[in-house]
Structures are given as structure tokens and as C-alpha cells.
Length: 348
Ligand SMILES: Nc1ncnc2c1ncn2[C@@H]1O[C@H](COP(=O)(O)OP(=O)(O)OP(=O)(O)O)[C@@H](O)[C@H]1O
Image (cartoon, rainbow, N blue to C red):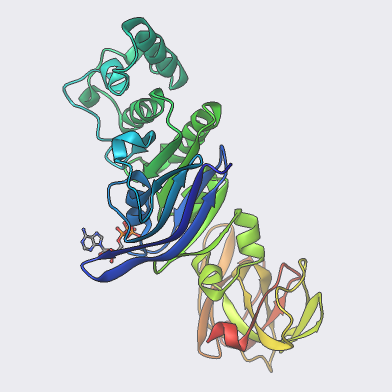
């Protein structure tokens, strides 16, 4: 049984479609990140799961139990969901221990105290249990928020941009810690983020969202190596499109030579374009080259060249000992990699 199933979900604000026939499955104990550009519908999807809004169409099923469809709607407080938001929403007048105990009023006193002690232990805040939120750092407040969200053993945890208020220096340590806490508690989680780096570090799978739909769900490596469409490929990072003809299942011919692919090409059309990322390009001096250097900068360990080819701009790294004359034409050498090959139809 999956932990969460969203089926054909649609939601409109004042007649404006924001979620459009969205499907998503989250398996047990999985952390999935909803990742996408601002306004693509991530928070609205989270609200539909939580029951804070009622979708006009489709189904929300949590742990096999239907929470919302045409016939029924289970109120948020009866969905057994833990939530954590970017401002943590801690109660300022309650201590750390009281904040964690807040959702445990169904337990008797001794059980409640036992669970609070377990959670304090889990988030390493035993020595802070009598402090108030304003006496804690951002990271400590976040640990309280996660402890409170997990204390009543939710079926599902929803996290909306939980790391956006945390200093960059400690962010990745916290991401690691919170991930370990969630894994320890064996709870499934959906996490909303703008940041690819955060998503890679925190989640098991990424759901790339675009215009109210899931463009692709998968682990980071699969999305990079086999993006289903140009939206996913481009969202994951800059690249350049080059004309290509496939020569068999495993490679393409381009104006810059043949490229063998480390994964089977995703579709069977003969002609198309490949999307090549900077790290798979090498710049070489070539008097007949069609690539021009627009800018060159040294960034400490390497150079970065801003180059133009066929009206497309891309920044290509090159080792510090590279000797490229920025006034002369250059060409690309394409390294063997997992080639993203798209037919013309897919690109239009
Ligand atoms: N209460 C509302 N009333 C009307 N429109 C809304 C409301 N809330 C959100 N929207 C619109 O719905 C769309 C999706 O919003 P949503 O907050 O889900 O996006 P998001 O992907 O979470 O964006 P961000 O990354 O910027 O937080 C946006 O165009 C937004 O302007």
C-alpha cells in the first residue's frame, strides 16, 4: 500500500486552474520533494493533501484511506498528518517540551511525558526542554518543529520550504539531521522546495512540477540521465541543444562528432536534438569552429567560458591549465555521457 496517492487532482482559484489532473504516488517511508518554479502549484498541492483546501476534482488517498473525492472530505485534523512550515509556527508562550507535547492530548500524562522525552532525545534537545522558542537558534527551533510534527506518529509528514530560513553554513548539516530523524521514525514525507541542491540532499525521489502537473517523478540520477521532456531537462540545469542523428540505440552523430550514450536513447526517432550540459562539453581551439567565446573568467580552480553557438549561450568549465584564445573561434568536443535525446516534436 502506498503512503499517498493523488489521482487526477485538479484545483482552481477563482476559475484559474492551478493543479491540473495531477497524479502522484509516494511509497511507504519515502521522502519525495515537490520541486518546481515559483507559482507552479507546489504549496497548493500540499494544502490539498493536508485538507486545507478541497480539490474540485480527483482523489487524495493516505495509507489506503480516501481523504477526499467527489463524495467525501476528511477534515485536516482527522488526516493524521504532521506539518512543518518555513516559519516553524512554534507557540511562543510554550516551552520546548510543551510545544512538543501540544498534539498529544489524547495520551495520558505518563505516556505523554514518555513520548516528549523520546522526541527530545531524538532531536538532541534534552538540555533545552524548558526554554522558550525565542531563546533558541533557527536550527534548534526547526528541531522542535520536527519533533512536534512527529510526536503523535503521523502517517505522513508535510514540509513546506523547511530550510529556507536556515543559514547556508549549517543548512546541509540540518538537512542531514532532519532526514535521519524522519528515516528513524519510518514516516513518509513530502517536502516542497525551490532548491535543487536541498532536494537532492533531503529526498529519495523528486517530483518535478510544471504548470500544475508532475512532469516526472524519479530519483535524481534518473531525472538527469533520462528526463522525460525538455521541461525536466532544463529545470535540472543549463545546457545547449545540438542537432543530432541517432546511429543506433547507443549513440548520436552531431556537428561536433559522434557521442556514445551511457544509457539507451529514450525514443526511437532518427532525427532530433541532444541537450548537453556544460560538464559534458570540452572547448578546443579550432580555426573553423562555429563557437565564439564571449567572456572568460578564472574562478580559482578552473576557468569558466561563456560561449555562443547558434544563438544559444552556455557557460563551460575548463581546467586552469587550458589555453584558449578568446579572440579565435573554438569548437566543442562532447564527452561520452548519458545522452538526453529529444525528437523535434518533443521540443516544439
Ligand atoms: N489564495 C489564493 N488565491 C488566488 N490565487 C492563489 C492563491 N494561492 C495561490 N494562488 C496562485 O496559485 C498559483 C500556485 O500557487 P502555489 O503557492 O501553489 O505555487 P508554488 O509553486 O508553491 O509557488 P512558490 O514556489 O512561489 O511558493 C500561483 O499562480 C498563485 O498566484
